[in-house]
Image 1 (cartoon, chains in turn purple, red):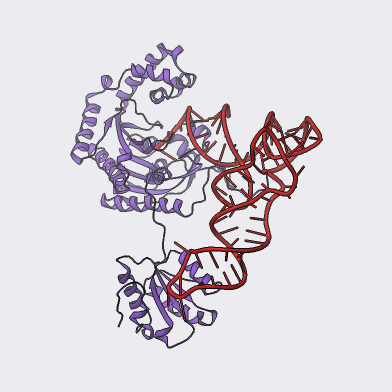
Image 2 (image 1 turned 45 degrees about the horizontal axis):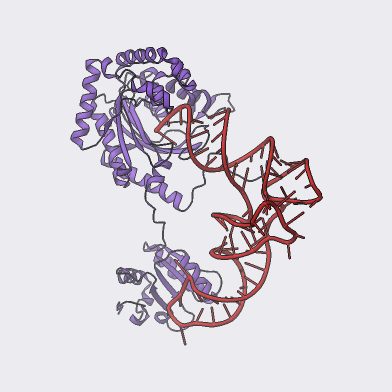
Length: 431
RNA sequence: GCGACCAUAGCUCAAUUGGUUAGAGCGCCGGCUUGUGGUGCCGGAGGUUGCGGGUUCGAUCCCCGUUGGUCGCCCCA
């Protein structure tokens, strides 16, 4: 139905558990990136189309058919960012950030790609992103990957994820390897899947991670990169592996692991899981030493990764939702003003408070319980100030007394003489 | 861009080989009960079965189209 109120395909309305999981991931990222000295940056959600077209490669699917591009009112072609890296590099060049190099940067936010939605894949999706710009040493790769590993550990999902590591070599290595692969697959082209025949022209490295069964047989006999590695590239990869071992980061060598975008060199890695169906990569990244220079900036080595927030969110344990600490329940309308004063006092002392103000006393209590409040404070219509309040704890676990005393201490002076008898189900004495 | 499966109340699902007023639970609204309270009971609102067409005496059920969802291919984090 054309006039139906509906959201755009591939977008999400996040609420409740969904957004709680989302926040769990982002909070952990912010905690961990500080431990490693990565500074927050924020770059625009849209850039000139050329920023992405040039960096990702004009022929890649992302650029040729998945970007949200549009002309603005001034006639400029703009594009909603399909990834973070290109924007980071553009900012690095635009702002002369080489004065700060090496920079360790972190960002998170929405990205946009016009793809068919499926599990773990959306048209507006969200990523965490970490980059080290201006450091060409293998120790930078190690630090970056170690941060990813620690993030997964703090999210409690390290046991569901494996780090796959490979190298794409330097330019010379990559060239030689690519030529050998093309020769190998071309010789067996008639046994190749139709998609892989196309890939042979566009991106032959991608044949290596084809899911087609017969492709996989050819991949198994395909030449590896190691035979084509220059001694410099080999030494670099060796140093990365040694560093990871020293840092206690477990990994497996994945000789068929390649990257989607043209700009990657040397280290390539993915943290993958088999818990998410077809979209198993949870963090993916690598080194992109030539990118900033090809975009018109100074020759700058760099390495980075991106992580799918939605994918990580699906892996983390059931989150505990946000809870109200105290529910204030005025027995009837006549005491609502008084209840409002108490609510204001409690909130100003840092307690999260909800006030029930609909229906009869019974209904109000139900609404309060629904907020998940641990502590209930009833305000009665009769008696002295100290008698009008009744404080009870709904959970009644070992911490109940602590919670009750906390609320009591935050009450306005005239209410503090509340009777011990008014506490329910525990031994608190308030006097 | 390609393929498979799915589409019933706000939500999760029923409806016996196509059969007459399409049901339940939860949620929502109202009432009663309950003297420290997410209880129990009663009642109520809410559906042109995604949309359009076809077959049939008759379609939630079968067929075609369309829109949307889910999963996979592709791509990629």
